[in-house]
Amino acid sequence: METKQFTMQSIKDKWTKRPLIISGPCSAESEEQVIQTAVQLAETGVVDIFRAGIWKPRTRPGTFEGVGIRGLPWLQKARKISGLPVTVEVASAKQVEDALQFEVDVLWIGARSAVNPLSVQDIANALKGTDVPVLIKNPLNPDIELWMGAVERIVKAGVENIGLVHRGFSTFGNTEYRNAPMWHMAIEMKRRNPHLMMICDPSHICGRRDILQELSQKAIDLDFDGLMIESHIDPDKALSDAKQQITPQQLKKLIDSIKWRHESTTENSFNLALEKLREQINQIDDELMQLLSQRMKIADKIGEYKSDNNITILQPGRWNEILEKAGIKGKLLGLSEEFIMKYFDAVHIESINHQNKVMNS
Ligand code: PEP
Ligand code: MN
Image 1 (cartoon, rainbow, N blue to C red):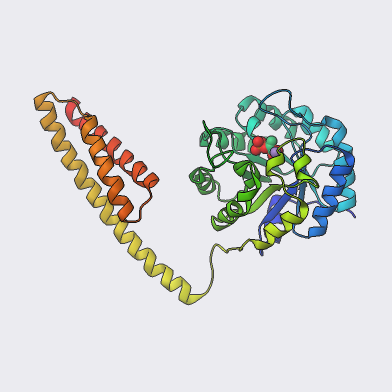
Image 2: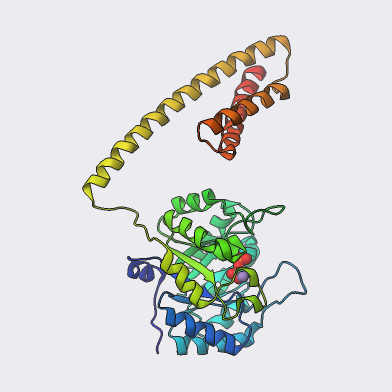
């Protein structure tokens, strides 16, 4: 079967019914594993692009670092046999050149490269004059400017087909996720780049199989354009990321279980109801802003008193008292503790800034 030329936009246009699905093993391990996985994925009928890592930028040395360039002919063969376009991760100019020589259809820049402008620039230099689509994962740390910078470097190299991949962010300590999703970062990146496709990588966010479905549904509910999910013919024996991989058959089940959403509808009654509710929200937001402004005016007054009496702005006792009361009240009102803490923190900082201005002017 011949693989057709395509662009990110053409894929996006093609899949009006459901988003783009990229799947395949974390790492190419052997020719047999690569080909079998690709064939089984193609048989599911739900996969658009086959992925496999051959150069693996692992956090610690001594773990499986990929088969390297000898994996490229395996991918080329898998592409021919399965009919699926293929994508690999590239981390240097040399890797871009090697991948393109072996007909790789789409390249992706991993989180460990996106974090380093020198690596991204090296990759960008090798991309000049090519028309290969490039997916750019978010950098390891939640720095949106770094992610934007990586996109700008690839755009400047003349690449027109660019997609973004949200794979979560490194955090300190154990959490529910391997990489914290911090959805607001992806949402802001989508807002800044409405013309770019945004794909979610639930595998690297979750780090484990049991919550992949739930996370994938969340991404679709947030209007993501696709999912990249790792799959392996024998996940438990995978040489990298074994805990998060699923079989091609499990992938099909997962994809079939997702409720696909649309960003909008022409259904009149729905649009009217939505409009009314949004009007109420706008009204409440307006009132909240008025109230916050009043609150800050009171903070200014307190600042004047504190200034006259040489009192510090911050009084930890008072701040603890506010947080404690807010936590209890918030719970009764159905607001999460996380939200209450973030909200009060923001209000408190704004108050401090106001008082700082009054006391030092
Ligand atoms: C991967 O996709 O296998 C990978 C290494 O991803 P990330 O760059 O998101 O860690
Ligand atoms: Mn992986």
